[in-house]
Amino acid sequence: MRHSQADYTDVKSPKEGVVTEKGIQTTYEFGSKLPDHINYRISHSPYPRAKISAEQIHRGLTEQDTPSQIMGAQEYLMFPSRYDAKIMELFNLYGSDFVTHWISGRFNKNDVPSSLEQAKNAANHIVNNLMGADSKTVDLYVGHDIIIMPMMFHWFGAYRKYKWVGYLDGFILQLYPDIMVYLDKEGEHRVPYPYWWGTSS
Image (cartoon, rainbow, N blue to C red; front, side):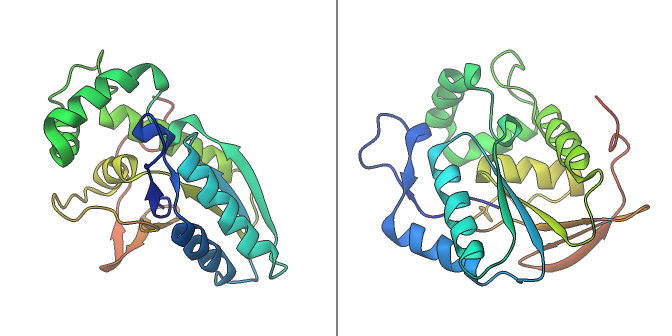
C-alpha cells in the first residue's frame, strides 16, 4: 500500500517528506478498522512518510489489542539511494510519465534500476518473508506509488497509465500453488505467475 497523505512543506527534498496531521489520523483509523483476528507484520520503505504511516497503522491495531509487529525499513520498497539524484532529474523532466518511460525500459539501467529487476527483487523478499508464516499472519507493506505501479505491471500484467495509486491505496495479494489472486479497487483478479516468480534472479 501507499503511505498516507504526504507533507513536503519543510523538507529539502521529496525524499524527506513526512505525513500531514490529517494523514496521521487517517492512517491510525485505517489500522484501527482492520480485522482483529489476524497477526500483522508491517514493513515500510526507508522514507519518513512510509515509516510514519506504518507506525500509525501499528498504533491503530495495538490499541484494539490486535497483534502487530513493525518489521522496520526494507530497502526493496524504494529505489536504492545511490540513484536518487538521477531519478529526481528524470522525474522533474517527465513528471508522472516517468513511470511509463521506466516500465517500458527507456532509461539506462546505470541511471535507474530496471523496473523488472526492482519488481523481481521485491517479489523474492516478499515470498521469503512468508516462509514459515501461519495462516493467520498478514504481511503489510507500506511503500510508494512509484514502486507499486511496476509491481502490478510485472507481477500481474496490470498497467493503467492515468490511474495513479492514491494515498493508502494499493492491492491485496494471496498466493496459491498455481495462481495469484489480487484485489484492487476494480475487484478480484486471478492471474498465473510470471515465469520468473520464485527464482532468485
